[in-house]
Image (cartoon, rainbow, N blue to C red; front, side, top):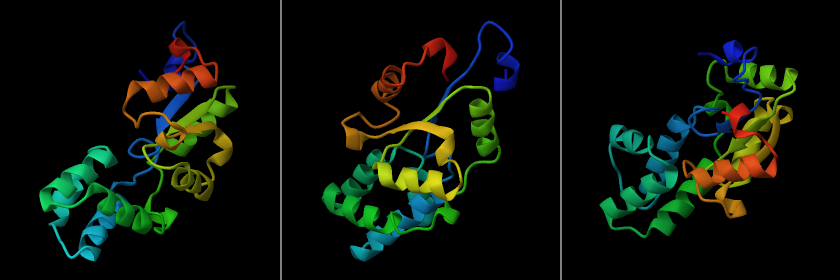
Length: 171
């Protein structure tokens, strides 16, 4: 069932909660690149296909798995990764096809889009702004605000509570 099909029946979807990494923006290639560069900067390397496969997991899990694989402190890898990733252009992390149109469609019908991110707020806000979507979002939540990282349900529950959204109207 599509969002459009549900707007006119009893199961109305009015609001969407988006994950910035993997649902709204295609960030995996950029994350794979940043992870590879971070390892290289630390004098290590791994095949890109291995890193890309790990990048399918939440970023924190990916960092921990790579750190364990190479006997690194996860904090050292995380810091290097963040420094590289934060400098990557937004053009290398485009919205998925159709996502901007869905965001605008929700807003045009009086609904709200919220975003959750596993990282700090600034990179996610930078992507929203660079791709002309910042005005489509009512809120952005991240672990930097004390919430558990997605996909933990507590961050979604916090978004519902903070923005007074009805769960039955929100996906």
